[in-house]
Length: 546
Image (cartoon, rainbow, N blue to C red; front, side, top):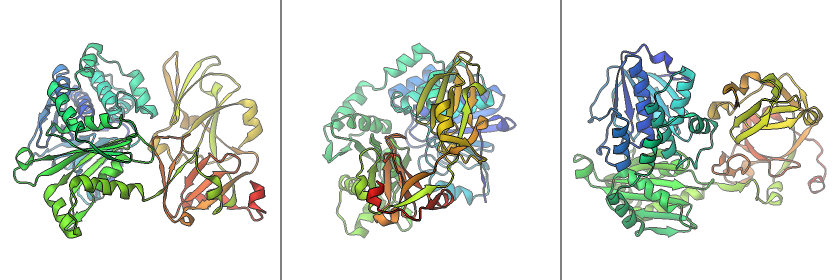
C-alpha cells in the first residue's frame, strides 16, 4: 500500500540517477514550461533526465511549436508501453489520471495544481513509493515549480524563467486569473526574455486555427447562460481557445466546446472519442466539477470517460462507444450536445446558491438559532517585529496584496483561514486580547501561509512562524443554521473571499452568520462547529434581537 508523502523541496531527489518527467497528453504551455524547468534543474545536477509526453497527438499548435523551438526544450513524444527504471515526475497532471498515458514506475512524484481525483485511491493500492506537491488553488503549475525552486534555492537561467513565465501567462488567461499569492509572486519576480515572450504572446493562433475557431463559433448553441459548441476538426488545444472566446460573449458565463476524434486519428484499436473543453467565469460553477460529471456515468462499472482541471478551466474525453451504450441502457436518444445541457442542469440544481452580499437574510434566519463563539483564535504581530520602522511592506494574502509602512501603530492580523487584515494598535487593544491558542491554521495547507515582502531589501517572511495568538475581548454572537434544515446542500459565493469560486456546504455542515454583519457568512463543519460554538440559552424574541 502506497503512502503519498507531501514535499516542499526538490533537494531530496538529487540522489536519483535517472528521472523521467511526464507532461500530460495534448501538452499546453504550462505543462511544457514547468516540465522544461524541472528538466533543467535535474540536468544541472548531472542527473540522466528525460522530458516526455504521450497520447495520439504530437505538439502541433503554432505557439507551442515556437515555444519548444525558441527555448530549445528537449521534449519527446513516447508511445504507449514506455517504462522508466527511475523516478517518474508527473507535471501539471497526476499519476493514473485519464489525461496521461500510463508509465510504469516504482517511484513517483506528482507536481500539479489540479484537484486530486479518484486516481489517489488507486495509487494508494499500489506497491510504489509516491510523493506529491499538489497546490490546487494555484493558477498554474509554473507557480508550483517556482515555489519549489525558491525553497530549493535554485538559480534559474533566463530560458527557464521565461518558460515558467509563459506557462503562468497562458494558464491564467493572460494573468487575468492571477489571485493566489504564489501566482502573484511568480508573475512579479520571474525574469523573462522580452523578445521571445512577445513573439509567443502574439503567435497564439495560426491562420488555419483562426479559420477553425471562426467556423466553430458559427455552430454555437445556447440555453440560458450556457453555450455548447460542436467544433470543426482541430488540434485539441484549440478547443480551449474557442471556449475562452465564447465566455466573453454577453450573457454567456459557461461554455463547453467539443469535437469527435475518429479512431484513425486517435487510436485505431479504440472507439472514437468526444474531446471536450469547459470554461466558466462565475463563482457558482466549477469547470473541473462539470468536466468530471460529464465523464462520470458508468457502463459495466467502467466510466465512459475522464475529466478534470481546475475551477475556471477544465476538459476531458468521452468514449463514444461507451456513451452510446450508456444511452441505450437509459432508454435515451440524446445527442452528445443534448447530454451536455442535461448534465449542466443537473449540476446547477444540486445545491442552493447563496451570495454573501445579496442573499435574503430574513428567509434564512427562520431556521436559525443564536450561538456564541467560545474562543475564536487569530494570529497577530506588530509590524515592528518584522522590519525596521518606516520600511515599506507588501503583505501577500489570499484576498490580495496589502501595502503598508512599518510602524508601532500597525498590527497585522491573520484568521485561521489565512485572510490578512491590518488594524491600528488602538483598535487592536480595544477589540482583542492575548490568549494561549493554539492557532489552528486550517486552510494554510490549501492556500499556503501569507507572506510579507520587505520591498526595498526584497526580504521575505512567512507570517505563520511570527504570529502571537489573540481572541475577542467581548463575546461574539452568531446566527447558526444547520444546512440540513434547508433540505439541500449549499454553495456559498463569498464576495469578500473569492467571488470567482464557492464554498460547498454538505447537509451535515452549518451556516454561520455574524449577528451584526450579515454579509459575514461562512460554512463550518460539524467537528469544528462543536469546538468553537455554544448555544445561547435565552435568545428571547429573535425578531427583537435583530
